[in-house]
Length: 339
Ligand code: TXA
Ligand code: MG
Image (cartoon, rainbow, N blue to C red; front, top):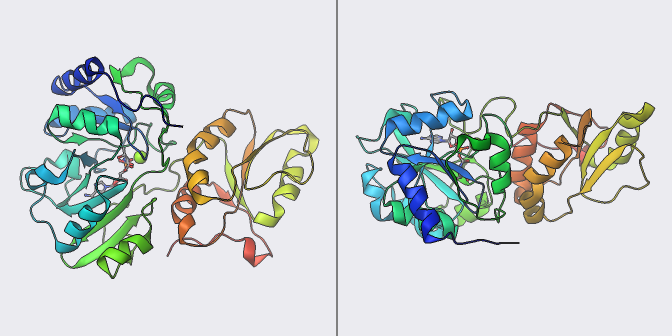
């Protein structure tokens, strides 16, 4: 459900003023909520890192209202990037491009590239247009935790630390943008998202998958990312009921994220049926993980999701959130790691 899709003029003015004052503003995008700062003010961008507890060398995405000011941020626009921008902007796609010389190191993490996104959410568009410049924004969560898909998640994360939180309702997509690096001839998928590898290939032809071997920074890199605080185990699809039984023996509380209803009732199990459609599973994923994390359980068991590219983004986030993956004799229930 989409509500409050547009902010009032007063809300936008307050947010723009906060950005001009070097303060942070949380705002909705169609993927997840962002924690934004004036991308031309390095001191303001540094605050993002402080508030999130994020290592200082992690680069952030610069958000623009349209490609019209791209030349201020980007040294050159490879042909493939131009085609991707025309096909998917505004939308859930981030392009990593050769940086313009003045782009500050706090944004790029000292790399020779800068990540740019033109989000489609009407409230993000309102804010960006009214501000008239680039907004540097990672997801509005503490480092390594689950990205927020509702304004209340941002409040849970940061309480009163933020002067402005624009409430644009639930994010339509619910997972972070697809990230594609376009440097020279090569096009490389760095982070899967709702724009799939097949959709990108249809526009640019060849697509390399995964970070380059010599790449210093993997998006969302690090062993646990997008993670709840309760240990999370991925369980072979056919074994979810049995594993829930076993884990709840002796009255232990267990949380389950499945794709169907339980076969029988489990007394101390909190069971969420997230369904079999990748779009709605993705839309609900972070909120479901938050709910299960709050359920007072010792473990979260996640039913292994199907193979196939449509599940790539969900699979990527689940693998990053997982503390362990249960082995199975049943090969069809396994979760292949992205190449
Ligand atoms: O959907 C999204 O992309 C959300 C919304 C708010 O736009 N943003 C988001 O930002 O997910 P963040 O910071 O949580 O993830 C962006 C990822 C980071 O892991 C970072 O490493 C990568 O993008 N990144 C940023 N600049 C990069 C660059 N120049 N080269 C490679 N990776 C880069
Ligand atoms: Mg993030």
